[in-house]
Amino acid sequence: MNAPFANQQFDVQNGTLRLFAFFHLNLAFSSVEEEQRDEVIACCYWPLLRLAEKYGPIGIEASGYTLEEIAERDPFWIDGLKGSIASGRVEFIGSGYTQMIGPLVPARVTEANLSIGNAVYKRLLNVAPSIALVNEQAYSGGLVGLYLDAGYRALLMDWDNPSSHHQWPGEARYNAQRAVGTDGRAIGLLWTNTVAFQKLQRFAHNDIALDDYLDYVRTQRGAAARALCIYASDAEIFDFRPGRYKTEEKNNGGEWTKLEQAFQRLAQEPSCELVLPSQLLTYMPKKQQPLRLETPDCPIPVKKQRKYNLSRWAVTGRDDLAINAACERIYHGIAAMGGGPEAWKELCYLWSSDFRTHITDKRWSEFCQRLRTALVRWSPPEPPAMPGPRGAEIAARHLNIVTPAVRARLDRRRGLALDSIQFDGHDAPLAGTLP
Figure 1 (spheres, one colour):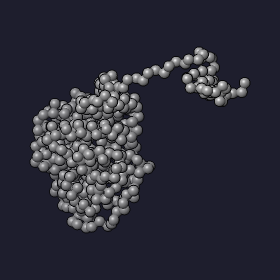
Figure 2: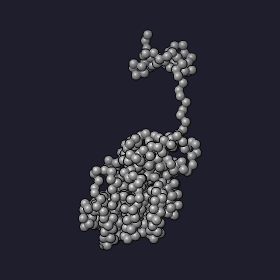
Figure 3: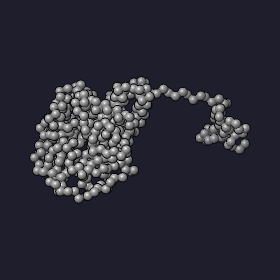
Figure 4: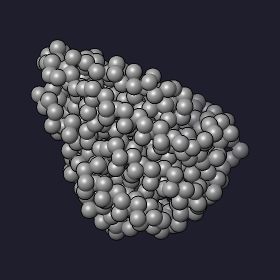
């Protein structure tokens, strides 16, 4: 259970609103073709670095796979990110090698995903991130220990879904807390805010005016010091459209310029302060309460709208049930046969969430080929076929089964109801129909 909040009247300090933001980078985004990735880097990722240099600090989160793709296509961007991290304009946030749904995979796979991701972060950026974004913000208590063991000291998680199932004071959303895992250990917790990041998106997309956006931010100030996550979503939605959906808004450009305007004005706001996410872990430590995010009616909270749940990545998409089952078979094969790091890395790629939503036809075809290749290599051998019946051939109505220990007769017209059964050592059936 959650411990009660010791004092729901939070101490008045200076009323400062500490703002933090992070942008989620994902070149494996399901609606983006591989040949569009260079365009994403140019139109989205470079402007993000310029935003950080001009008006940071901000956070940037990316999977190891995304960083490898960027390094292959534009190594100068990686150099730019390293420079921004070194100067303190950017804090890098981890998530693992791929965007994998932790509650849907074996713990050992999550361990591998975090470990491989950390190795990529070290190799390409020479950093060991201390904060992780829970992938798709699909949280379960069992993940806490895995992130702690991987070296993380805090998680980023959505406030709305967990809080709707708890009687937490509303003020708790404005301060770092601690998430308690199933093993009793706790990890730092920073809240993201769906309404806040959607407000910034709407401003960048010309749906609301800058003054309206700033008015919203001002309403989040209180008598006591508070923290607010003003952005916690995709970088690829600004000045880029995949062109896949007819319902997409037209890309008129200038959206990163509008983001610069917003961050510039926020930096000038009285009693507002832009900070790095990790700085919030040191503010008001006495207010950080140990919380269990899960409840019996919401065992796995997820992001944003309540319509999001595990079924989105478990049984929807093109053929999620089949590909998840295939990944499970590959996992058991790798574990049984002692697969090396490359095998685990490939499994993490195959278990990525992006193949389980609106994947494009071309990428789906390529994914299925890689999945089949891994299945051939790692699937455990098929169990030997059951021996055929040794009794009389199947009659029109009855099925006779004979083993050294039992003889049974099943009625095919009645759903294989037991017509008779006789165990070894008995002269007559133990049960059966009347003659």
